[in-house]
Length: 75
Image 1: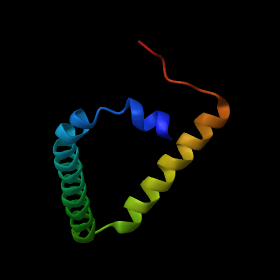
Image 2: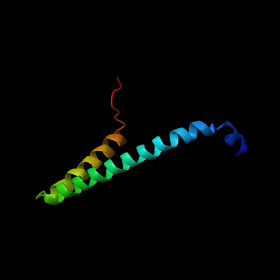
Image 3: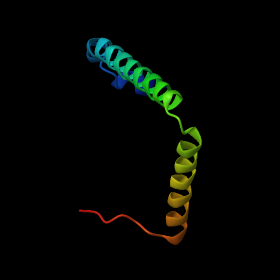
Image 4: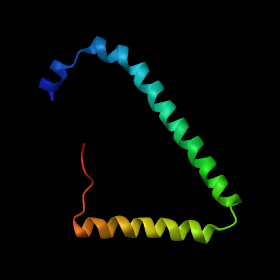
């Protein structure tokens, strides 16, 4: 543990800490805002069973393709 702390540049850590805190706050805020908007739009949509069925079908498709060993081509 002492060897790890000996290699840490304290000044660099102090300088970057506010940027990390602000960045984490922005990511958390955007995630909360977008998830609340998504939940609100799902509630207003008239077919929640169709949404759940589509989600289950997508998960099933991913599982089946994974079990078959199909991979996406890489560029």
